[in-house]
Length: 515
Image (tube, rainbow, N blue to C red):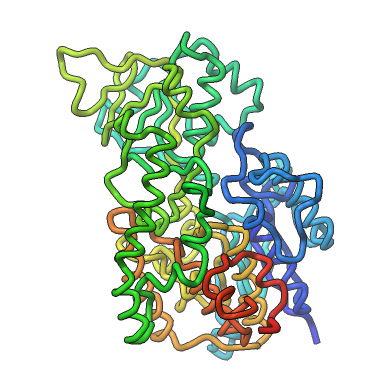
C-alpha cells in the first residue's frame, strides 16, 4: 500500500518535530523550507539574544542537550547548533526541500465527496531559481503548517496621514532588519547615532542593550514603552523556583479550567486568594530586583495576567544598570507619531515643545503571524475560517485542528511557556491522530470546546488577552492530549510528587508511566 504523503511547511522546530513523528508512523513527509538551513527563528537572531526559557524546559524529550552546554539560558548559537544536531541525529534533512518557498495551498475535494478522500495542492517557488521564477505543484494527502508567528511579516504600527515614517528625515527599520545584520554591522549601524527602540518585548530589550553597549552615555538611547511589563530578572523569585508556583498540578488547581466539574470549580474558587498571593509574591521580587517603582515602571496589571497571556520576557543582565547610568532612557506613552526631527510623544509634545530628536528608530513591534497564516491559503473561504473572529481565540481545536478545514493541522502558532516542549506534544498527538489511534469529535463538539477555552483565556488574561496561548494551564492542556492518545496523563510517581513537582519535557518520554 502506498504511503500517505504529508506536506510540512517550514523547517523550524515545529516542522522538524512534525517530520520526525510522522516518519515514526510510517508516513512519507516532504518538508518545504524557504531558506537553506533548518532552525526557523534561530537561524538569525539579534547577536546577544539568549534563550529565555530555562534549558531544562526547552529540550526534546528524546534528545538531550550536549554536556558542553551548561548554561541555564544558552546563546542563540548554542540553540541553533542543538536544533541542527537534532535534525542530523534523526536523519531528517533528506526529507527537506530547501530554498523552496510555498506561495499557496489549495484543497481539492475527492470524487466521493468525502473530505477524507481529498488532497492538497502545494504550490512552491524555487528561491534560487532567479532565471524564470517557475512554480511547481506538489500533491499531498495532509498538510501541517509550521510557519510560526515571529518572523517574515513585520507588524508596523499605523499612523495618521503625514505622521508616519515618511515624515521623518532619519532612518526607520524593523527589528527583523536589525536582526538580519551581523554583530559588527549592527554596532556600526547605531554607533554615534541617537537611537530610539520602540517596544518592550525580548527583541526590544536585547536591541536596547546592544545600542547602549555601542554608544554608552555619549549617545543615550531611548527605549519607548507603551505598557509596563513584569519582565522577569530570573526564574527564582525570592529564591523559590517559579516552576513551583506555576508549573505543577497544585498551581493549576487554583484556576477555573474549561469543562471541569462542580467540586474542582468550587476548590479553585476557594483557593483563588492563594493564586492572587502567588502573583503578588512574584511581583514583589521583580519590583525589588529591578527597582521598578523608582523608574515609574510598575505595571498596572497582575503577574498572573501576564503569564496567562504568554507575555513573560527575561530582562538582559544589567539592563537596569544601563538605565541607572543613563545609557538607556525609558520613555512611556500609549502612542507616538513621527515628525521631521524625530518622534512626537502623545501627551507631551505640543506646538511649543521640542520633539524627541533621534537619528534612527527601530520598531521592535512584533510580527503579523496571523496574516502569514491566512495568506498561505488560496481559498478566501479557508482564509476566513483560519482567521476567525478577531475577538476570540484562533479557531483551532486543541490549538491544532480547524474543525472546518479538512486534512490540515497547525503546529507552532499557539504559544506556551516553552514552545519546543509544547510543539513536541502536539506533534505526537497529531501523529497518533493520523495513525488512527483516535478520532476527532464532531465539528460542533470541537467548536464548543474552543469556546470554553476562549472564556477561560479572557477570564485570566484580562485586557492582555491574546488569541493563541495556553499560558499557565500547561499540564491541564497536556492532559487533554494524553487522554486523546490513550496515555496516562499522570506522569509522576506518588501523590505528593504528582501534586507538587514541576512538569517538563522528560515527563513525557514514553507514552505511559509506571504510576
